[in-house]
Amino acid sequence: ADPDASHVRVCVIGGGQAGLATGFYLRRAGLVPGVDFVILDAAEQPGGAWAQMWPSLRTFSPTRYSSLPGWMMPTWTEDSGYPLAAHVADYLSAYERRYELAVRRPVRVAGVSRADQGLLVRTDHGNWLADQVVSATGTWSRPFIPTYPGQFAGQQLHTAQYRQAADFSGRRVLVVGGGNSAAQILAEVSRVADTTWVTPRPPRFLPDDVDGHALFQLATNRRRAHDSGHPDTGGVAGLGDIVMVDSVRDARDRGVLHARDPFERLTRSGVRWTNGDHVELDVIIWCTGFRPALHHLAPLRLRGPAGLIPTHGTQAVQEPRLHLVGYGDWTGPASATLIGVGRTARDLATALTQSSAQFPIRRE
Ligand code: FAD
Image (cartoon, rainbow, N blue to C red; front, side, top):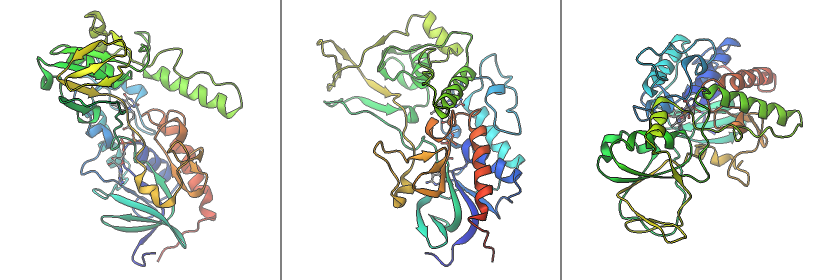
């Protein structure tokens, strides 16, 4: 225990969209930002992962389906497409100012551990003793790259390091991954480079007139079916999951959206398939996703067999004072989306404030 730790009712770790939506509902329930609850964020600037993404990234839905509770994202007027990442980062920055959420940054949480009267949150800028903790640290800081036999001598990077297509001009580039990041990066890199695309299974494209709002609806229906004991509705599998933003449509029209099956191994100069096919490459871009950033929770020893923390809704099964939000469907249906996180954050704030009788306020 740390006798100098500041007491708070709720400590929210992470000031991206999930942390901000939680803060919005805590404030609406009457908790005072900076007094009853704090939001801590490791980054220098607001915006969560949106402030780190490559500049040409587009959201997969229009602003009316990309908003947090309380205040709509301002309409995107720069062009006819969906908003760029910077527009979302600006919106999140304005959102936290608008609701005076008093996010403290840069404050990096090193670890959360059990203390006599709550959970001790240790950071590089002092410690907090919280009755309850909400972890909303996202996935951006934990890029995932699958392992393959062999070694490639060329350049390799993950989505998280990608900045712009011009960096690969005239080169032979492999894009690995079947989601929206892979499709958008392939679309722009294929304009300046010789590209090959590998997906774990055949890519699934949404119909042109369907945007990310449909993905949200499907995730919600799936969760409802699950909660009421009905069969899984299959999520997005039947519909597809790559949203046909303008750049991806253009790539399709240029005939570059042909995906190959996964290769068998890396070689020094490229990749090889089981049938002996070999492609010579200069660069591999791994658009192979992210994992939840949960290192700071390691002292609580809550991880289940799949590396995730078992939860009832957002509450950790083995540690009722801990909630997790925003990482994926396992912490709320579509809670890893702008539009989806609001509903989970609302339920979470209700749970946090209702349980305050269990975890009474201790103010000096
Ligand atoms: P983040 O935005 O990652 O925020 C987490 C915050 O926690 C960060 O600010 C970080 O600094 C902080 N943090 C992390 N660790 C610590 C620590 N130890 N101590 C203190 N602070 C810490 N969703 C949509 O709705 N529409 C889209 O179009 C869309 N496109 C996407 C495109 C890409 C390439 C990706 C990767 C995701 C996309 N998503 C989209 C999904 C989702 O909206 C984002 O991933 C979103 O950033 C998740 O928000 P978050 O608040 O959970 O996490």
